Amino acid sequence: MTTHDPIPARLAALKTTPTTDLKSQWRDLFDSEPPPFNRRYLESRLAYRIQELAYGGLKPETIRRLERLGEELDGGDRTKSRIRADYDRPITGTRLVREWQGVEQLVTVTAEGFEWQGRPYRSLSAIARAITGTRWNGWTFFGLKNRRKRT
Image 1 (spheres, one colour):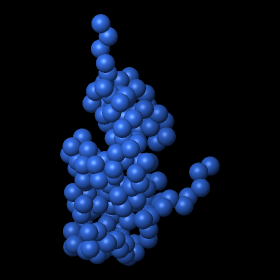
Image 2 (tube, rainbow, N blue to C red):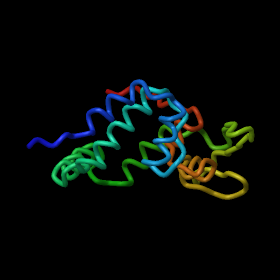
Image 3 (spheres, helix red, strand yellow):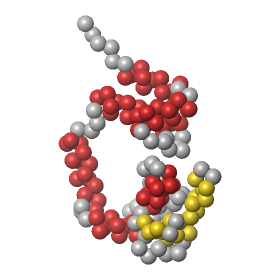
Image 4 (cartoon, rainbow, N blue to C red):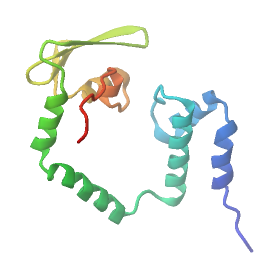
């Protein structure tokens, strides 16, 4: 007797599922609001999440390998990654503006990090999370791009 795996059919159905239903699935599977990205992104992340829940996530050895690769980039030294981040950071006094759900959000770059609504923050991601209630890359949320060339 063979057992039927419903996961491939569920993944295939994502291609024809209305976007509103994809967003509803996102809320169910991630317990958060879907990001405002394109449909293809929603489909791919939902497909991964469905498989992750059905078959399990990354193997521990894969996670360890990814962590080792990350450490090769900065030697495991959080100071080096922070220095790189500071290199790309806008100059002190810069004001970042983003409208979110009809409300203008204003962030000021400070010498120590960032300030939003009179409160200091170390990262733009923390501010984006406070504004939206979901995890965001702060640089993406505020429309900043890394213009530094990789050598």
